[in-house]
Image (cartoon, rainbow, N blue to C red; front, side, top):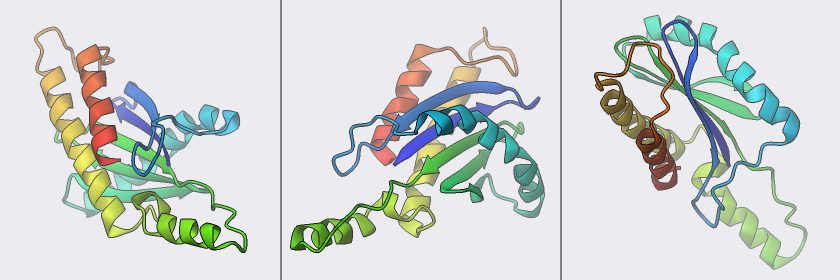
Length: 171
């Protein structure tokens, strides 16, 4: 599964962006977006901001789950108290070509129970929620710096490393 994570400020400006892949079940940790999708990721996330603003007033929670779907991409959202949005675009892997062999059938059965196979399953939602919680905690620590101003891009390498570690841990 490929992921594109972004933190969007209160003025709808990107504060942080990171693209990665799953490290679970033999994943290499690299995003596998095709070139066209890679260019659309930022646009797709920003187009979901209207839906985020509608949902945030109907739902009293910070974690809004999967709020939007664009073709095979799902967008999940976490909103902070200061209206900063943590957005995650996740793209499930393509269906494996199992064929008629027993090995292909076993591989397709195994992948159907993985977190990446169903982006709306409770296990996936829990993994995404845990990732958002850890990313939010690191965001709060990064923004508590006296050198950080509101809506300023986050360039802290320690923050990036902690987001990468959270992605490996949960996704």
